[in-house]
Length: 155
Image 1 (cartoon, rainbow, N blue to C red):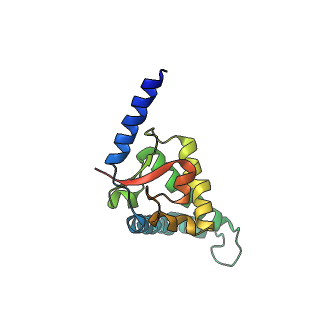
Image 2 (spheres, rainbow, N blue to C red):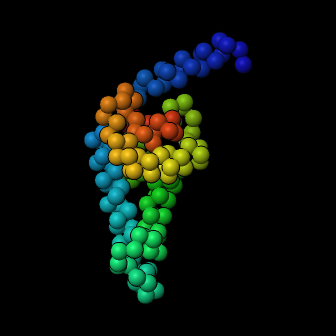
């Protein structure tokens, strides 16, 4: 590809990114809280009743109980599939937010898995991974920085 073609493509991408309104910490926080309520509801309506019906333990202090693993799987699958197929979760839909790739590409499986699974795990472990959204120019969390994504307001 000629250099001028790459420069034109780069300029077009910069113009596209300039039109985005980046979603700040509080908007993302409320969307995430909404998503946690959705996941809590799914677990309460599906996961826990199934475990009770099968007479499997849902109480106790064990970290790796089957019910805990099932609820963790629900959490991660919700974020991975919603982000991959819709570019947003229900919480982001309610607040008019969307995950975008900073290079203008469609979200790939590797990007989504890295952002929603590995990146989110690191961001939760190091809580500052979410707080940095308030201070970075493109309002990216640690998981966004890893995946080269950000969250924007839908137009």
